[in-house]
Each structure stands twice: as structure tokens, then as C-alpha cells.
Length: 329
Length: 281
Image (cartoon, rainbow over all chains, first blue to last red; front, side, top):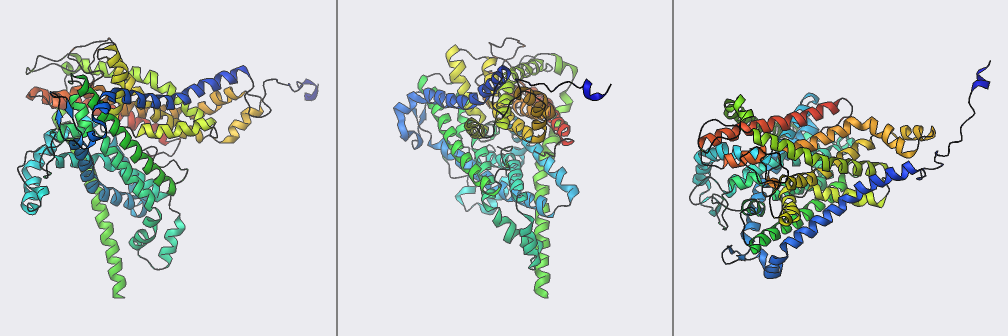
């Protein structure tokens, strides 16, 4: 009895694909299910755009493009203009970037270039926890901890030091454009940090070695070779942070003071597009009011899409194909 | 010689500044967590987890309605969002050259950057406006929509890590394509897919904006998905912006519960994966 005679003849399996083409019934069904899943994603987005446009139709027909430049917001006479909202959205996001970008880049450069190995993971992990805290918790903390702190110590200091600038002038309330900007800075920092870090890690080591070999100090090596090499990716990370800040809702709603006005002082209350939708949507009664808010949402959507697409393109230029930044989006 | 010392000194000063940036960046995290524990822990009692809210301005009462509400709303959202996201993720990983993959990936990135409040408006025009009443289900639909791109991207990344030799081995043994995908590829990456799903659940559990005008919130315990329903983040918002001291205390306690849930989910998910894949998200 040899093993040879006992061995089964090789089965000519009809189901074995000659190539990776779809052959059997099971394959077809499986691929169909997967395809339905994959196709439903673009379909959903198309549906979202369509529904937003439907909701905003009334307001688009009545106000057109002048909606973005008018400053009237009056549900009684059904006159709506979003300029103060757009202004507030941009200003609060800019404040956030001014504070968050230097900090995030400092942390990102330190972690990739200087930090001892034992420090890297824990610090990156702790900062990523900041991204896991829900917006509404930031708002709660902002109302009861941050705003009292700002009102009693930080804002008066700023006013006595920089009061000659219109930015830091006038009465101090607490809820204000500046308070919203500061909370936004804390919230977008983890995103800017983690994407910059991914981009910096994608810089080839030869760049650093060459620079050090020519006698640069470690800092000079980083600032003259590593950072320029990753420049477009870092700009992408910053723009990604901007995209986050523009759409942030709850924390801003709770801290910005919610007033449809434009003030020169950062101590004055303001409003953002997202905050206006959050505050007024469930209480809006007139169709035109609802439609105006949907119009605001539509504009906000367009802006964030443009901003994020730009950021992605910039990041891809440095870290092509590594999927850098897609986790942070 | 002197110049060299200066340059080296400057380098060290910059490193010092960066260490300072790390400390400043970690301060808010520390402060937020300490405040949550100090102000929230005192209000956590058995009543807090088992009773519905007391009348406005009175002591006692709890948030059981919001805990149940969040579980229901997030659960239904996961039932809708996870299968779609995972299926699309497997598709993108298994058919990387297809045009559908390219479009789906791009759209998922766009959706990931979309503000959640915009998705809330979408759920309102799509469901609430047509039904003429607020409902928990509309909230779930909005959250599901937020989940799909997150789950898609993480599961795709995970499946891409499976070496092609495994696939080829299975196909060479005469496995049909679908069995290869399911029993070889998906099984090896299951922990990764579970992690991605948990992270997505953690991220939507704290979402407030899309629920504001869909699930709306309520003061009562309810299991009816076709009616307004409470949720923990909504409760934090209402209590934090309300006029009563008791509400503020309950807001801190509810926020502490919320953050514990979110942190346990996301840290647990990361630890589970740390051993298999080097992924620090």
C-alpha cells in the first residue's frame, strides 16, 4: 500500500477561477453586495447635496448671491443675510489657527525630530485624546472654567497691554469671538499636529543626514531641509485644521455669545454659520427662515469641501499614497 | 568657534521652546479631565443612573432616559452605518483599480470633512420635514451618515495590510473569490475592522449637533424611535446652558459619563490593535 495509489486524483474544480475574474454564483452575489456598499457612498453624498439645495431653494430664489454680503437677519420681515455669520466663522477660525499652528508645529517637529523614543508615543497618544473629547464637553468646560478665567485675568491683561488696538478694546462680557477662537484652537490642535507629524515622518532620512554632514546644528537641519521638504504637506495640515474649525458647532455656540452683529473688538460676542444653524433651526417657524438656514448650511458645506480638497492635494504632494491625513479628516 | 557655540546654543533654545509647546498643548487636556472629575464625580449616584430628571430646579433626578436614548440612537445608527461602511471598505481594498473605488474613496474623504451640523440639516430635510415630526430615527440616520466614511477608511486601510500571498494561496487551493475575501482576508483583519467600528462609534457617541433638530431630546424615558428622544450629549448641552445650579451639576456628571464611554471605547480599540498593527491614530 503506497501513498501514491491512495492519493486522490486532482479534482478539476469548475469553481476554480483561471484568473481573478468573477465566475461562480457566489462570487457574483458577493461582488454585488460589496458594489452596493461602495456605490451607496457617492449616492448618499449626491443625495445630501440635492436635499440641501432643495431646502435652500426658497432662500436662493429670493436672496441669490447677495445673501453672502447682506447683514440683515430678521425672521419677522423674512429678510436674511449671512455676512455676519460668514465673518464670524472666518474670524474665529483664524484666531484658532494663529494660536494652534505654532503650538502644533512645535509639538510635531519635536516629536519627529528631537524627542526620545520613550516620549513620542505617550505624548502623541495624549494629544490624540484631545480629539476624542466631544465638542459639547468643550463647550461645558468653556462656559464654567475657561470663560471665568478669561474674564477675570486674561482679557483685562490683554486690554491694558494692547488696548490701543481696536481688536482688544471695549467692554468685556466673557462670551466672545476670542473665547470661541481659543476653544477652537484647543480643538483643532490635535488634527494639525497629527497630520504634520505624518508628513514630517515621510521626509527621507538622507535629507537630514546630508544637512548634518555639512555641519548644520540639529535645529538648522530641521529648519533648512526637513521643513522645506515637507512644506506643502504642512500647509495642507494647517488647511485641514481650518476645515475642522469652520464646521465646529457646539463649543462655539456655547462660547461665542450668538449675536448677529459685526464688532471690531474680539471681546464682543459674535456668531458663526454652524452656531446659527444649531441655535435657530429647531425654533424656526417660517419657511423662509428655515430655508435661509439651509442656505447657510449649503454654503458651509461648499466651503468645507473646497478647503478639504485643497488640503488633501497638498498633503498628497508630500506623502503620496501613504494615506496620510485621511485618518485625521 | 564662538559662532559655533552660539548656533548650538540657539538650537538648544529652540528645542526648549518646543518642549514648552508640548506642555502648553497638554495643559487643556489635564485641566478638562481634572475639572470633569472634580465637578462631575460628586453627582454620580445610583439615582443618577436609574431615575429620570426631577422637575426643574429641584434636587435629585438622573439621566437614565439620556443613557438609554444614546444607546438606542447610536445602536440603530451602527446597524445602518457599519454594514455599508465595511462593505464599501472591503470593495475599495479588494478592487483597488476599479473606478468605483476611486470615486468612493474621494467622496468618503469629502464626507469625513463635512461638518456634522450640515449632515443634521440633511437628515432634517430628508426625514423630519417629510414626516412633520422630530424622531430618534432621523438622529440615527444622521449619525449613520457620519459613520460610513470613517468605517470605510479604517477597514480599507486594515485590509490593505493583508499580504497578497495569502490571497494567492487561497485561490490556488481552489477557493472561490468570495470565500477568499470572507474567510481569509476579512478573518485576518477582523480585529482591525472591529477597531475601526469601535472608533467610529466612539466618535459619534459624543455628537450633539446632528441630534439638535432630529432626535431633539426629551425629559422622559422613551423607547419609540419614531418620537423625539433624549441623548447624553443633548442633555449636557441643555443642562449646561440652563439657568439652574442643579442642572449645571448634572451637566458635569453627564459629561463625565459621556467622556468615560468615549475614552473607554477609543482607548480600548487602540490597545486591541496596538499588538497586531502599528497604528497610532
